[in-house]
Image 1: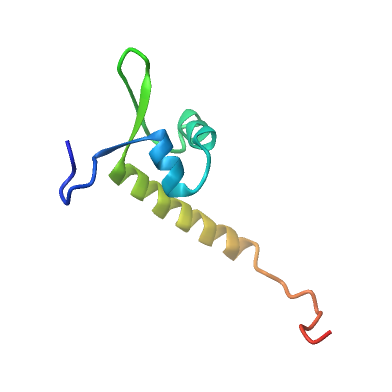
Image 2 (image 1 turned 90 degrees about the vertical axis):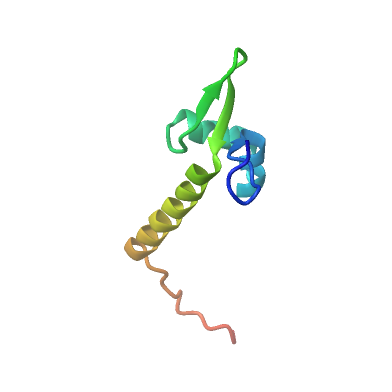
Length: 83
C-alpha cells in the first residue's frame, strides 16, 4: 500500500540507507539502538521503516546537529586564507 502521493508507506532498510546516503549496516545499527523506530515483519524478520518516521528522524537529526553546533561553535584558527 502506498501513502498518499504515491510513495510507499514502508521502506526497506536498503531504501533508508540510500536516502540517508549510508550503509544498510549503519541503518540496521540505528534501528537496533532504537534511534530509528522500525517494525519487524514476517518469519524472516524483515525490517521496515515507515516513511513518515524516517522524515521525523531526519528532522530530529537536524535539531540535534543544530544543538551540537550551538554547544561547539566553530572557532577560526587565526590563519587567513591569504597565507
